Image 1: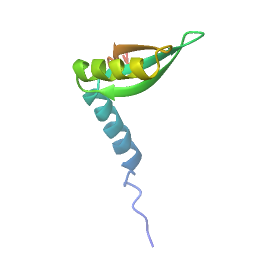
Image 2: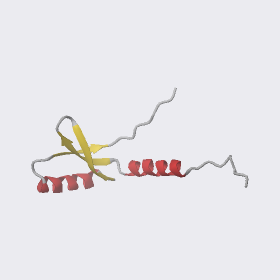
Image 3: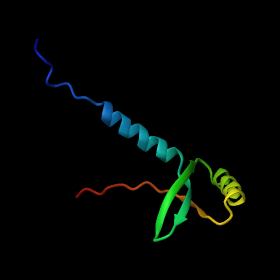
Image 4: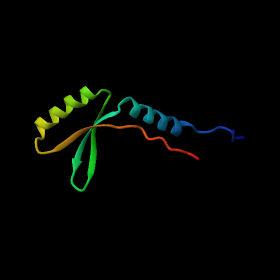
Length: 80
């Protein structure tokens, strides 16, 4: 049976675009600061006020941990 060699499997490309789109929808992140300049993204939010509210809850639950609210700007690669 002949195969269509012009067919391109776009499922992985579509999934990558969906992930990138979802990240653009939630630009505000709550990040935990760890020793040795390490950081872990704890949660993502659409608005800063939601992120600030979550940050207050985290401070009540984990008073000794260090968290910050960060605007995660998308990076675009420049091609010359």
